[in-house]
Image 1 (spheres, rainbow, N blue to C red):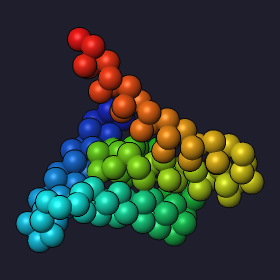
Image 2 (image 1 turned 30 degrees about the vertical axis):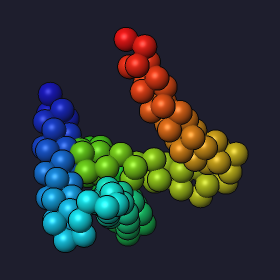
Image 3 (image 1 turned 90 degrees about the vertical axis):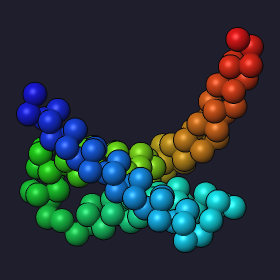
Image 4 (image 1 turned 60 degrees about the horizontal axis):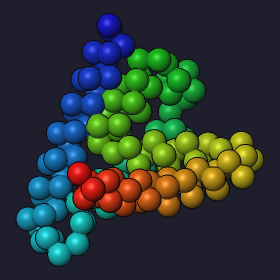
Length: 124
């Protein structure tokens, strides 16, 4: 139960931060392009990379820190950061085929799933 509360607290914080950034970018940059989503995904990926590279392993891999920051906050902020960090980890571990597969599946597979969802919704 404690772990779920840690994830929930991080997720709520990340979600609110995402909302705040998207509202500000909409007001500053307008609705002509999804700048807010790009900004959120870019910041989330930067934070995942920065924290993953700069924080000492005993802190980075502490279960509660990892749950709050990576699963909760960044998960609520953007799941793209998790995808990017996992792909980098595969590449760092010289699992290049798996890293490439992860990229392709997420980019093309998720877009195909979106199109599939739209298609199924039109059949109903």
